[in-house]
Amino acid sequence: MSLSEAKKKQGGLAGIIAGESAICTCGLGNGLNYYGYAIEDLAKNAEFEEVAYLLQFGELPTLSQLKEYKQKIIAQRALSEELKAILRAIPKNAHPMNLMQTAVSALGALEGEKEDFSNQDEKIIRLLGILPSILVFWHHYANFGKEISFNSKQESIGGYFLEKLLGKEPKEDFIKAMHCSLILYAEHEFNASTFTARVCASTKSDIFSAISAAIGALRGPLHGGANEAAMYLIQSFNSVEEALKGVNEKLSNKELLMGFGHRVYGAGGDPRNALIKEWSKHLGGDTLLFKVSEAIETLMKEKKPNLPPNADFYSASAYHFMGIKTEYFTPIFIMSRVSGWSAHIKEQRANNKIIRPSSEYIGVEPREFVEIDKR
Image (cartoon, rainbow, N blue to C red):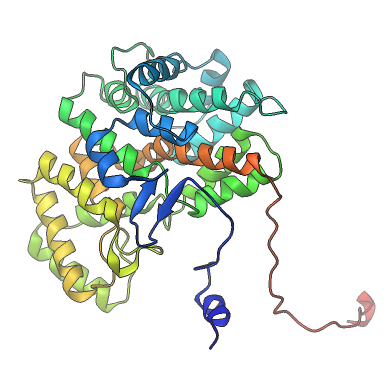
């Protein structure tokens, strides 16, 4: 079997080069890097806003640049009355990902991007500032009938989100854990949602449409929804023994366990996993939930060594230990990945050609049309 035939058989465009990018290396023997910076260095030493700046402009900011960048993001937190009215109309039982997608699409109508894209950087900053506000506004209104203020002493996106969601000043460790998580999720090369954003951008559509399309791709459990699925799995067990028995049964039944394996990294493992696991252990290492998580990870290493945990597995418990509802895990992903999506949209626009691949036809041979009364 030739290499091209093997790739076709594998499906899902696995291994197919679909374009060029200078933003990120992912699983190429160099680990995960954003514009040349190792994910380990960024996650351990940077704030998320530093990484968002890096993805938007290609270089890490100076202290003064970071301060100015943060102030611009803070200034974009508020929702217009028109957008609030739309969010009030979305019912409590709506999926939060549909909420986020609807809000971003509405922004395109309410405060759209210029047709020549000359204000794209302003719109990226608007999205970074407003996305946390969208979720927390709807959360408080849909659940408690209360409208919140967007004023806050928290300068970071992670700190602001936690404060407004939980209604109290967040612990410093929570803010640091959020920085780590947001950095880990910020960018990941041509994943499904990023490629969706680039396809949309390649048609010369506006940035809100491209981000909205990306959110639609992220919603699925095989992509962004994996952290929610991982949390439901972990929470379904009441003891370590029950978890071991349950996972063994799932493996025997050939069920898919979300939070394990990765299309790009393979058996080498996701470099983001160890970084977020540190925070999960720090925040809840003495809890049954963390012990169950580690037991599942150990069992999977024994039974499925080619399926190590990915970033979603311990992100789930880290968020849980901060008091975040499971259904909000993937919307947090949006707050982070919007920085990566936007970087790819800018890159696509800078040297654009519409993305229009071909398919290999496997249908019936040409045939004669038969009149309806003769069929």
